[in-house]
Amino acid sequence: MNETTRDFYADPAFAVPDLAEQERMVEAILFACREPMTGREIAERLPAGSDVGEALTALRARYAGRGVQLVRTGDAWAFRTAADLGFLMTREAVETRKLSRAAIETLAIVAYHQP
Image (cartoon, rainbow, N blue to C red):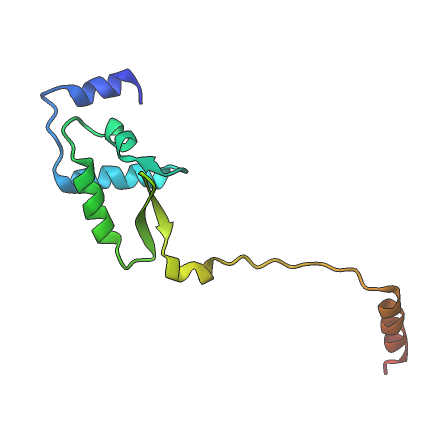
C-alpha cells in the first residue's frame, strides 16, 4: 500500500465503514492473497478504526458449513477448501508406460490373426 492511500484512510474525515463493508474488504484481501495473512497485515490495509477481529469472526461464521472456509493457521488467516471435501480435489493423471518386448510381440500376433 502506498503512502497516499494510507494517508487517505488516516484522515479523520474518512468515516470508518460499517461492519458489513469491513467484512467485504477483509474478504477481498484474503481472497486475493496467495499466502495467509495476519490480523496486523490485514489491519494495515483497512481504514483506521476498523475492527479486524470482528470482521474475521463474522466472516468465519458466514463461511461455516460452506465449501470454502475461513481458517486460522497459526496467527494468520486464509480461505481454504472444507476438509470434508478434500476428496474432490484429487488430480487425475494419466501415466504412460512402455510395453515390454514380449507384450508388443503378443499384440502383433493378435493383430495379425484377427478376422
